[in-house]
Length: 435
Image 1: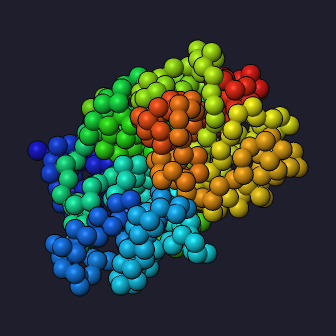
Image 2: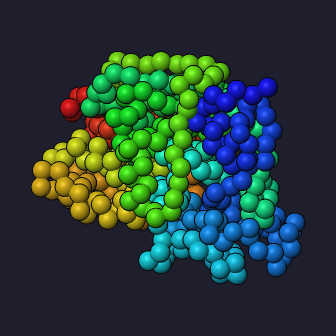
């Protein structure tokens, strides 16, 4: 028996399954609107697709397969370069409409930021991606989730996938957000509370007046890290802000949906964001939560500002506010997520000075080309790759052993505000010291 009152996740899946309603735990065939892949998983997905469907088989829809190389691209590593070349060959053979080739004017940057920037993310749609952080795109009211190469190959050939509808955990965030709190602080606090398995195969739905006040980029940070709590997807209902963002980037039609007021959820969580303090995740888990002010005896060797959770324009603006007129005391790495962000660093100003100038005068290292860079370690010549026992404060989304290169590195996750403040002091620092 089904109840027509549904959550936003259930509504999107019901539409994609051509059903009037779906219930948590129900196995359904879901039609994909977008399949995303990149240079890490793309070659494997393509290999399985060609093995199972035939070497000459065509993808189900060349307008809906989006390939964005971004992980291991600015490197001399032979295997990494071979991966990108295999994607070029496939995109050419398939006449794909959306292949964002590194080293060309068409290159964009990190897939999770580039996909919405290029108008591929639309409210009410289903996005599958061969990356666990595909859940980022729930920030615009889409159902977005990461899948493996085998599932992706099936989607590539058929445009659909069998999945189980997840139950919903609802997080209501009210109160006035302090200036020193960012999306990273919010999601680290939540993961710290519920644990890295606290949302296993659930939809994490974020709502409330504090969420409504957040920028799209900050919402992306929150939804991106839903997977760090084990979630199937993270999602925020579309509003005027998100609809305007999408309409500015695509002419394609879409149908936003929201949760019914009387829908049933598995569990409710409520927070007053006014009480939040800047936080960090200690090594080696995004769930190892602590307040930044509690760790001010931890000396750092470097700061890293970049990735899909820390390399957006809003992230660099936050860091620049802290760094303007001051000098960092440790190596500080800057990696814009996309070319659009990189261009913004040269244009966006604070007190009449561009962000790029602020970072240069502060003594940060040269700004890297847009990519994932050391967020996933990469070959030894990757910008920001760790090689020893460094202690790093980073705006990235994972701090597992070896995540940024060396297995001996200690990684503390934090917001751009906290990372910038820590870069100035040379130790983990609550950004309120400089605000």
